[in-house]
Image (tube, rainbow, N blue to C red; front, top):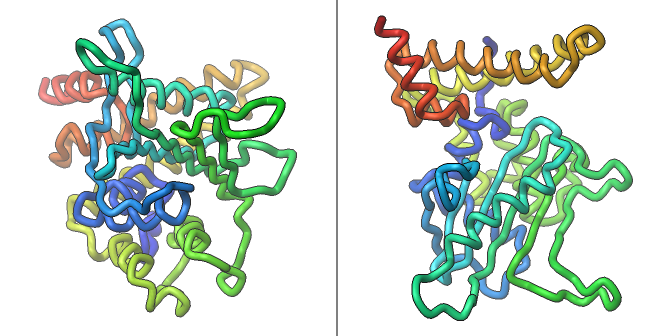
Length: 294
């Protein structure tokens, strides 16, 4: 496998290392302050449990890429989505519902909520009818177009529509988007970014050589899973007429994830790291671990 100088921010491992890392949370703070329309800048963030359970065991759980809260109680969900999903808008609304329910208080409660911001970073086009790479959504009055409720905001970044070259970047948000889209193809930090504290740090964090041996292996497994998944999609498309695209995708993706998990187990990675790479449940990973010991 060909390894680039900088890890790909569009892998699960790369995204969480750069933006889901407590040690470097200033990078996520910088990105969110550049992106969001908020009254007061974020000065600190606390990462929350990435797995939000439903109200009861029968409810579907939501596994979030990055979920955090700032010092004023504002909630932030940041989701990376590589493959196109028909109902991604529904998914984003579904995820915010967990964070809304989490705020419920026992006893007397006046239903006051703290603001929630959902950020979707998409490696596909959500809307093919325009060339906007950033879409901002709030609840509005249909007739007046005035904002009806300002505590729930959705931000969708469609990376394929962001086509600016280095010399065309106009603001710090565009610096971040250029980094996300191009880091894995670059062999050095662009001159324009070398004096920018946060972007330069992001390149340092993304350096493959700065990873530990275990982290390098985890990243390589993540990259392999991504390539396997793309190959699965291509194969499923070829077989669509005979077997059906949907079933081919589901079956191929599951098999690829299981094989990656087995390799990770053999190399001594812990369950949480394997889940970050494969998105398999802890229960599935434990079952594979038991099979491996037989």
